[in-house]
Image (tube, rainbow, N blue to C red; front, side, top):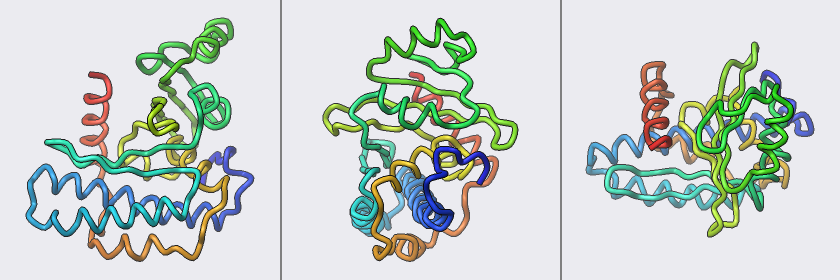
Length: 221
């Protein structure tokens, strides 16, 4: 895994264990959302099964929480990390990812981190959300957007499924950091159960772009 600076305190075995669980969860959630939009009939069986799996995932990894939400058009898989506010989230995780390029309050790329004065003022004024962009020659470009959810008493990550499942993305590394830093119960089997849903293929390149466009359109509305 390239540039996993934030994950150096964890063993490769633990990181890979989380990666297997998490990518399967993201893949199944994305496929259920696809089925949901098409009103597939077997959702009555798939959704309760997936929600039971999510409960097991949340018991296994204490520092990260997954919730599901049904809307008229979508089946959303929401990601939360245990931080009390956005300033702590940025200081403890988002700022520690290699390739930090820019930040924003209402959109991406509003303040370049190279502009020391503007960047310092931005950090002082952080409230309930942040948009962060990264560019790294080894791991490529990625983005992270986070909102403070006072009801959940956590920070919610807004993500595209393809990027969250990419082990080199900032979003994945942040999720792995929070999931592993409080330890986890290796005895709870997530991967095998997630594999029984039968979704065998990860999103191809066209679908990655489709998800990315869908994510940006919704997020920036």
